[in-house]
Image (tube, rainbow over all chains, first blue to last red; front, side):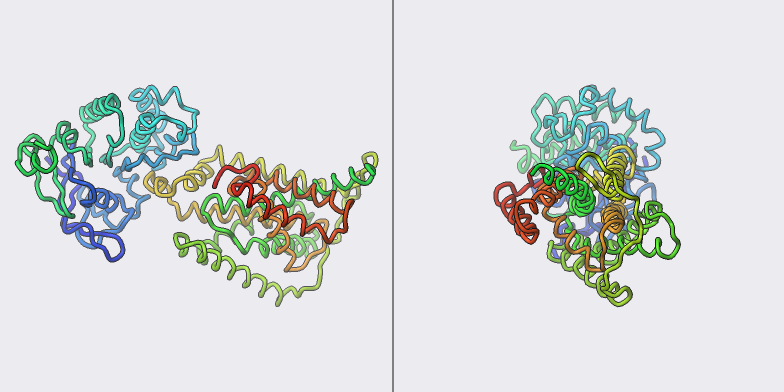
Length: 237
Length: 286
């Protein structure tokens, strides 16, 4: 197996405040990896550093062996590194269709935009029904579908999800769970960043546990779920 | 009475179109990046001088010269964005106000030194249009048509073209736009350029029927604020309607009271709307 995205000794933060203290994490190709941990341990900061919304202070982010840590956020989708951000961050004043078009901004994805549109409408038929509706008027679940679909329109090599399940009704959680399984079968490399530790560990192949800006535990998801510290701290067992 | 009122109203409404296009520029920049462009007035004045200098030096038809002025306005705005605005774009509003105010002072300073403040006039006429009791110069009618055309093209650009959609995406959610691969800095520069382009076009159109100096843009900038409050900041079509309301008001007021009361009435309205409907009469964006 080869690591598609490799993060080494990554440190970053905001202003004077350091949040990440030497994070090591690697995403194997075709695998669904999860990163779990409580609120405020630095999960979102790690994603922001990977996507380039904030700059790394030290350490490296390598994609396909190439250093990408210094690249600005808008260059990442071109490479195939795509984030479905927390809170969806849709273009609420634009139509569903336009949101999907914006997903296909990068030059690779633009070439196959029509095919990819068919594909995401196949995955989420509801979005096709709502094609010309303003994204801000969709229900919460539909908005989350649109956020995932918009990410897929970018033709990701690595697709990262920040709190995908937050605030969703159980039936929608199940739907998205099935979507993830299908994407995994298609060979997509994914990183699921979750506070919902139980859910994340049950769907993923490999897992990292994060606390206070560091990775404290890693291993196959089923093994991580059996660790005493994880059970006590997150699973309430 | 009505034989005075109707011509005044038509006169005011035609002028209102031009106010509208000026305000649209201010409104677009605010809508996309939450920046109040205080260099709006001088750029309107530069548009006036652009038409004037091209016409008096080459004899080119002012409406053709308008294309040159529009392009120059677009480029100037992108430069102003890059030099003065981008570095403070995420700073509090006071910083962007001061930055654009500095640009305002620089343009007025250079303009006064090079062009003096002697009023200029473009020696150009298309004659007058007479319909019943109404007689209006064709240049005003042409300005109204030009405004409608530019507004139509702006909407087409924003809703159909790819860069236009990027502008709307960046206006809507800049962080998400970056995450989707949209280079937001370039899109912001383009948006600022479009805003100043609209200001320059407004100036160019005004120059075909009013005399002007480098300071003339100031009053249109102030009117633009009133109009934006009428139409809702960040809503270009609202700006056009706001312009028509203000133009109509300006046309009708002198029939009832001395012209000197016009600004009092306008800004009274401004304060009143801010108190009652801060998002604007037609606006929704808070």
